[in-house]
Length: 270
Image 1 (cartoon, rainbow, N blue to C red):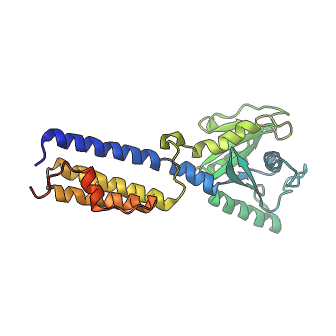
Image 2 (cartoon, rainbow, N blue to C red; image 1 turned 90 degrees about the horizontal axis):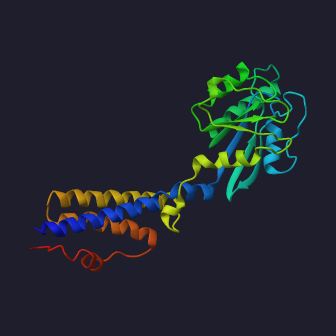
Image 3 (cartoon, helix red, strand yellow; image 1 turned 45 degrees about the vertical axis):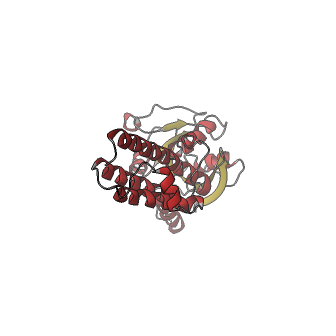
């Protein structure tokens, strides 16, 4: 058996390796975000200013804007970026009960966009009091990541009902641009992590993230065996597996010589 102090040193070293791998693995959320981007959908009842906000964010008049409720009949998709993060922005038809066949198809596509989006922005009209339709739409997105954009604050600002106090709310004016920067930050904030923990490393591949997680589990298994004072040969199995998994990321081939050098304090066969 290994002396107690050596066992403690080895355990501490393995715990440090796990902490480092956890730090690197934690960058996957940000890495995936930078690689794949976000799908963000505007939803709301007709004529609350979804298309105006859509145009304001992308920087030009892509969507047709009129005072007529129901102008947007189909979903519009446009790409732009926020702080280097690719955003696929979707302007949708207003959600309401309708007998118009074309508009009803647009409403169905809006519901599909909600299901497919990484983030849903529910747009309210600040110049009007919150309606039952607004609250119904909000209830339909409760199960998905969402925030509320209260548009048209340049016209009038009604106080929001207590029912939405727990929601993330951004007050904005598509007309004047007030609040647009706040809205942009609110869009990406839920998906950001502290990538500085990786100290320059950023995991962007799901396979690499999985390999790191599997390596962590192998090391934890070895620590458990170390605590149980089982044979060194058994402990080294998990460590060998961890090195092999990490080697698939780095492209390095793990050899017995490396293991022998790192864990030379293990007296195998004695």
